Amino acid sequence: MAKQESIDWLLEIYEEQHAHLFRLATLLGAGPKAGEIVRDAMLALLRRRNRVVDPVERVELLREQVIHLTHPVGFRANLPVPEDGRYLALMRTVYDLPQQLGEIVVVAHYLNVFGPELSHVMRTTLRGANRRLEVALNMLRHRLGGSGDLEALSQELTAALKSLGKQIKAIPDEGIEEELRKRRRLTVGKVRAQLVFVACLVAMSLGAIGAAATRDTTDAITTSEAPDTRPLPSGGAQAAVRAVVRGMPIYYVGRTNNLLYREQRNLPSTASLPRAAVEALFTLVPNDPDYTSLWEGTVNDVRFLDATATVDLSAETYANLIKSSEHSEAAINQLVATLAETMKEPQMRVRFLADGQPAPGVFGADEGFRVPGMAQRPGLWITNPRNGDTVGTDVLRITGTTKPAYGAPVITITNLETKQKIVNVVAQTALSANPEGWLEWSVSVNLWEPGSYEVTAVGTPEKPGSDNAQVSENKVIRVS
Image (cartoon, rainbow, N blue to C red):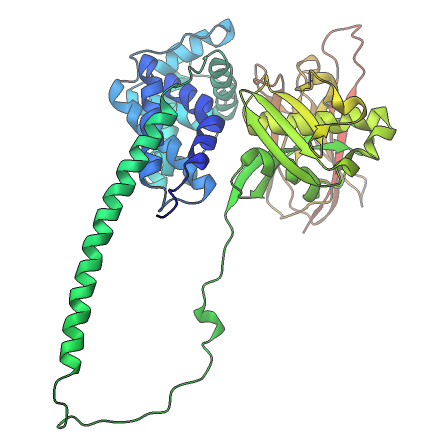
């Protein structure tokens, strides 16, 4: 008897994505039906398991299913109320938008998907999705008073929805495993019946062909040709393209200060998203040479359950790290921050093992480790461009984050060859901090002359007499 197909992979996806999908459904107005909608989405993935095999595409399918299963409930049916008073008026205005406009605002900013990804989950064209989102944001801005920049409004929406999502308690579905196993057995039985029917048709066809082959063929003209033994052209074979997980948050450590810096990276697709994130710390060199990873060694296993991750690494991985308490702390912060943001679990706890046994030194703490606070992050941070980047002679978009204590940073750009300061502006900065506690800022400038430039961002404490010193970061780029 053939071994029955396992659904462990599906249960693992459920454990990793349930809270995120439940909150998405609730933010779209599902209310008490959120759990039922997530279950229906899981059953849809079970039905398509042989057609959708890439882990990233499976998560995208679940999101798409949740969005469209929630739509008939009605956008204003059971909406959560923000506990954070800063976002109350904004979210009330969002939920007063027409349903299609309100939905696309929530989906785009809660999932942080735009362009082709947004059009895919909304089941519409790229042009249609962009147009609908543009209309929604303009209508929202008008209803909020008609002033302000759309980019700042977009950042505010992201912060509000992330904050609102945090207060939603995802209720576990106790019967999901039994239901999935039951549906899988029904599906397998149906497929087997279909296979038996097809086998009968094939047997009948082969019998007919055999009978035809035994007829008198003396009148037939026969020819003999040498077989073509030339190798197939290499272009005829399909190239294997490995799926990737796009835009995952990977934290690195500053070479000069051991603080945490994030890069959005594409990771090779694996069955376990937490493991892929941890392995990236061991294998992916940061794009910005100002950063580094403190992790070297082997990842044995990464398990994630109930907001707790257990990371089993080889014993030699810890050998150099435990020699320095400063490096140990920075390495722990790097891994915990990466896992927490990847899994969208700000309250995550991480425990370490060494070849299945308690990890040595500080890594072996029984209580594990929580997400590092703002003290382990720089006061000011340029996220784009990276140090050493080469950019074109057109509009350069400079982005970054700052701690609220420093307010809007001042951005200067200096031509290193002429020593001329060609830009000195205050960055456009969000009005309130995002869920991680940062103010996001941006500046767009035109650089027409080729050459080397230094981009500098400087943040000054807003409160007189503050203990915070002035902070700054710089990147050197090449315009060509």
